[in-house]
Image 1 (cartoon, one colour):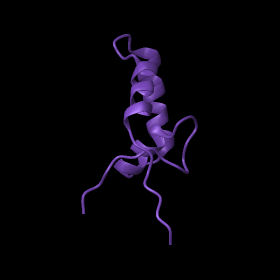
Image 2: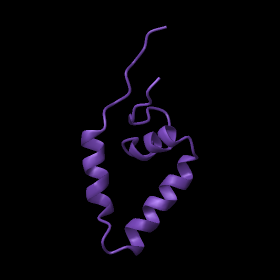
Image 3: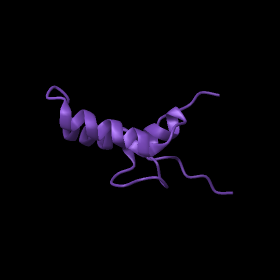
Image 4: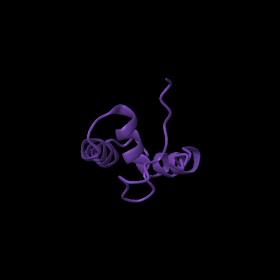
Length: 67
């Protein structure tokens, strides 16, 4: 089965982008958020806010299943 990247519907702070990356990679979302924040603050070449906004627009919401 192929894994797909979706925004997280349960583990989200703003739009669920970083929570979705954490679910996709199978690691803790706090670690992803920490890496993203540090890269945004300490790397002049990393436009964190712009990347987040683009990801929030492009990455789809998870499909809803009725059980």
